[in-house]
Length: 119
Image (cartoon, rainbow, N blue to C red; front, side, top):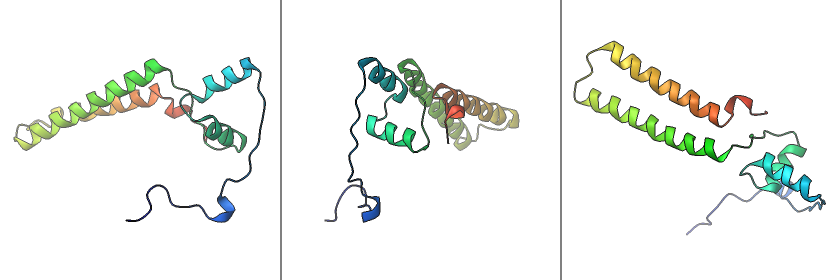
């Protein structure tokens, strides 16, 4: 059986150098609030190297995002079922379902700040 996990990095990309830094308790709390669920080391690496940083997402938004994922899945199932049963005869209904799905997708993006992500 082959090795599991991510592929090994080439030697020039291996992370072998450690950098230690001290924070005041308030600074560390601020950093943790900004990084959301991202690991500290990954967040600091990305921030220090001007890489893409996702904004911290409040827990309430994460819960709403997950609930809306179920709503989007339900909309897809409704459309598929109606289509498979030959019940979709009205192009307006198909358009309404597509628009609802698009609105749910946009709302989910807004909840996690997809339009605010730094590239």
